[in-house]
Image (cartoon, rainbow, N blue to C red; front, side, top):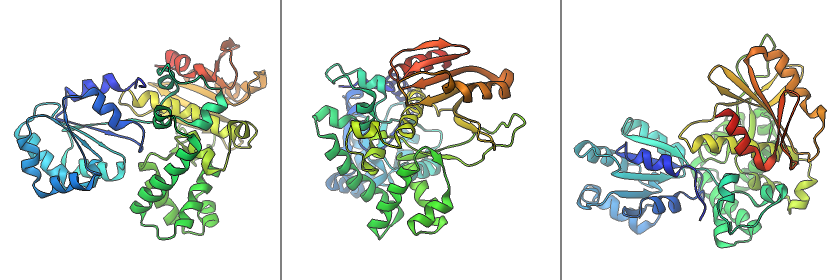
Length: 392
């Protein structure tokens, strides 16, 4: 088993709220974790037609006659459930009565905002962080490119599955089935093309007009599809930092996938060796480091205060982390060899930001971590420990 960093916070939350919702992408390990942490709870999965039918037929009796608390998996399949949960919690408001999980955040958030505001804590579970991957001593040590290609979803490691077969199946069964059902796409090939075009723009400034034109859809449709992919935890838009430091800023967000292996398979990358020489290797590594930061904050029940910074002259810092009034800058380079010119963007930004700049980091593909000039040089496999030791 993998040790999940969110476990302590999840247990604490369940002792404070009548209901807790654990959301996140499909196959991120939600069900496994909940069954492990709450072994005495009754369990029902609403993706199973017979279980869904039982609950639909008489939800009040179903929820009230059972003396044990409930884990209700894939709760978005029965939207009316939330009104009945509200009724139950109002009658008996003790903490920990219901643990909900689901993978369609769009539907879940809509229903929670309508019925359960103030009664439910919402947490997010992403696929494995690198430190969580290492918590399972039975898994093999990986090189950087192996880890990016093989990915962070736990199931292939648990069941010793071929990662290429598993990720191709994930794309077909979950992305092309579940997400298409939300956006009601009739033409599968159009949506397949859209996914691959997004993967080709991983780590780039988002040009919605060009994306829509290349896919042969309207800009409104492209915006809608991106929104659904975001709420399904497939990709996200990294916003530019709002403070300009007397410079004109780029205001366009960048597009990233949460999972490096999905990008690899959508782009047709066939092996870790292929990835190591691929034109997208730098962007895929950059996305991996950003996802590690997002996962760290999610394990504490927080949203990462993460941005990038770029001015109209092209001066750029890959990531800025806000900590109060302080800003930590992070440059991300996939090269395994350190050289001083890798710090040029950080140095320019430090001069511009002045007293706002509190710490600068270069995360790179090498094996050694050390301090150089005013920056911390951080090996890729140590980025979690060193970055969070300094920042958190």
